[in-house]
Image 1 (cartoon, rainbow, N blue to C red):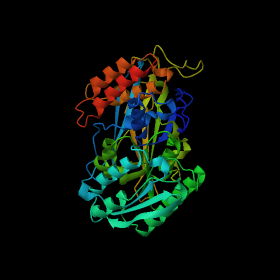
Image 2: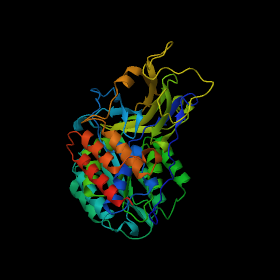
Image 3: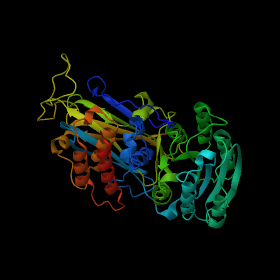
Image 4: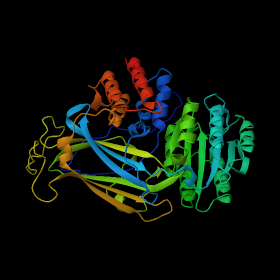
Length: 478
């Protein structure tokens, strides 16, 4: 663990016997911070600590070719795929892909953005406040006269560095940014309170109202209790003000707090390790970063014990929900931004597999033949049933989507294909960085070969960079 950095402990997901635990429920997650943070470690010649690697954020850093909805009143579309698991020839990798509606930039509602910027002494390093200021100047070039930008700073005492200003007044925004200097302690709590006050004053009815907290997470003055901070954020979330977080720097980085605050604020969490990453989050994916198209999105999958013997979810450890949470509209869950892709993966073991991870129950039902994968009776042609719940951005009542997953897909599943299934390579990379036993026999070279085989067109070069990171991880592994 790097000295001074804080990460939430993450335990490996267990294998569940379907006969005992047939249902898995979780909240979706569009955060990508873990990938950029792991990249930072690797580029600096270190393997990231296992708890810094949230595999779902590694996978969701990349865009995938899921079919997208064509109308705004259909906020997202769901796709499923099955391939042979790269690290276990006897199991399958179930990929659940969600693609959000991507409107034209002109369709985006006006935005009231309040940037809450840490200008404490710990932000003086080049990869902190200077990088943040450069990224915000790029963002300002994407805004219009309909948008409003405010800047609140916190250092010892909090203050307003920029009153609500039209988004196209880049001269005023740039001048306010140029005046920011890192010096002093970090009064994060007071800063958040002032930012919410300003956001309420400039609130745009029917628009986007969001605070973006940019810091290294080193809250050391003011409200330091995470429970109090989260209560403040939750209260304001209910009044239509969302909160996202952007993390910077190293040495005293508080990843655990940054993730929790964004989750509570119905926002997303990104880590900025370069100006290129700032551009990706604040320019290329601006709409997805600030505009929510569906909120409280939950996924529930029920496996058929006559077809599937066991399963293991890949990642999402801190997003797990109880079965009852799925129908509880008061239970908070994740949000999908405009154009976002979300991917969830399960490793599933069919009944009758020669190397099943869990022995069948002695007194359980007679399993179906592994070569047949169909069973008589009700829903015998399904290996699982997928349910999703979501709310409209301003709604309080969820909508339910359902789809059966057919056993014919198991029979047709083969190895990961060229141009597809890149998520399998990224998941294997994340699990390997976490030192999980499930991929102990999968080499870095095999992960690299899988990534090369499945990377596809790679228009933005991020998949090529992924292969470079795999090579770095190999070289850093004892």
